[in-house]
Amino acid sequence: MEENLATVLETVADTMGDAVAIVQGDRRRTWAEFDERAARLAAGLAARGVTAGCRVGVGLWSSPEYLEAVSAVCKLGAVPFNVNYRYRAAELQHVLADAGAVGLVFDASASAVVAEAVAAHPATTALVRVGPAPEGRPVGDGFEDVVTSTAPLPRAPRPDGDWLLYTGGTTGRPKGVLSRQSTVFAVSCVPNGFAKFGIAAPQSLAELADRVRESRAEPDRLVTCTPTPLMHGTGIYTSLGALVAGGRIVFPASRKYDPDELAAIVQEHRVTDVVIVGDVFGRPLLTALDAAADAGRPYDLVSLRRLTSVGAVFSAEVKAGLLRHVDADITDVIVASEGGPYAMSQTRRGDVAPTSRFVLAPRARLLDAAGRDVVPGSGELGVLAAPAPPEVHYTGDPAASGTTFRDVDGVRYSVPGDLATLEADGTLVFQGRGSRVITTGGEKVLPEEVEQVVLRHPAVRDAIVIGVPDERFGQRITAVVAVTPGHTLTAEDVRAAVGAELADYKRPREVVFVDEVHRSPVGKADLSWAGRIARGES
Image 1 (cartoon, rainbow, N blue to C red):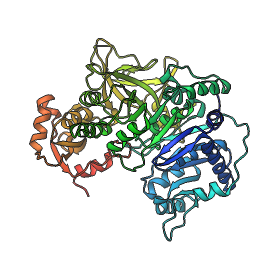
Image 2: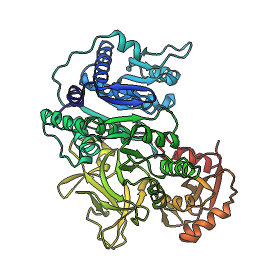
Image 3: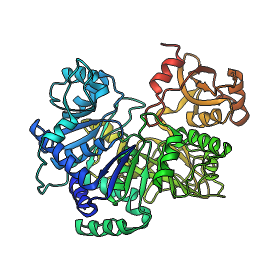
Image 4: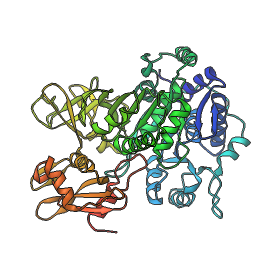
């Protein structure tokens, strides 16, 4: 369907009416409330200068307000884009300028940062703040004030609109991936919603309404929870997928990942689907489930049918541990802000599924340096590629677009740089992102491989492996390690653990111990921080 997302959500809202759409703590939004609040916010943004085609950032924690803001921007025919709520002023200013943002919906805790950033980018004039303004810093207008004091924007026909998603920027500055809202519906909302029931994508708004009406009648309809922030593609696409299919989305109330809270949410709300980010979320969840079971108060997770991981390594041992507590389908997906899926794996109780083993997704390919398919069993390292619509590109960066979005055999592919090999039986072995490859003494080392070995050590709570410039070797492998409380660990212990499983040249030459490994809100390694720590910088 070539429809604006706002029109899609309005169709669902008209069908679902007083059914609950969004839950967070003791807050509930019915579909009727969600749509009306979004319409009121849309009118408020219009009064502040936002018109069709304008770009509006959403820098909020996961909440009903986040989804209301996205819907409101789409109702105006404008373009929403994600903003990291942890940005400093210079980072925020860069993204606002790069997007050409006219507006920003932000959390009150970022008021000082927003004030400084918009002073450097005065074109961002429509500012709406969620939460009370800090004393002495009345930046923007209050979200609730706008919603309660503004009449709803009347509905009107609107065309398909642009969709802008910024990458995490873990290996450089964030880049804005520009696509279409209809593309988001087709490649993200449908797989995260209707496809879970084996239902094909609706081809019209009338068919969408019929499908949603059918799903409302189901006694076990889709109830999704993700601790992944909405500012990340996984979070927003998972949430939109659940809503578009007439399901319900439940957000954690905490602003920091709490595995016990996640388990309690599944138990209380009879959640059917949970989406996490690999071991970063999975290991703490397994620890919490084990502890609850050992204490004689196991969580009731019988409603959970699907557990999906996106965006980070999800190890075999953590999957197996979680499957002791839940009888669910575990799906591990390789996907990127630039497109996908590229590959996936599925695991159930009793399956033997080694870490980082996948099957290529339909129409995806593993390409060699010449753009040919890697031969299974050759041991050759290739890059993952998935078909990309012609409109998808990096906004304002044609050079980067030309590198990532390539024509191969007459088909346009997204090739963000994920590396893999193919075994003789067609099994894909994921090797990590090419931009992180460490070259030391002429040998190439994939840091994710070393990280997995380090993380398996019982005394290691978290770790990042990076390359640091070295005059002799080009780069030296350095592990930044946080130790599990109550345990002791030496650098030689870490090196010995790696040497027991991998070639000697893959052993970390240096090990730096820290109290906590810095990661983004979605669990991705903060490589800039790790680099400074590894180089001995403050």
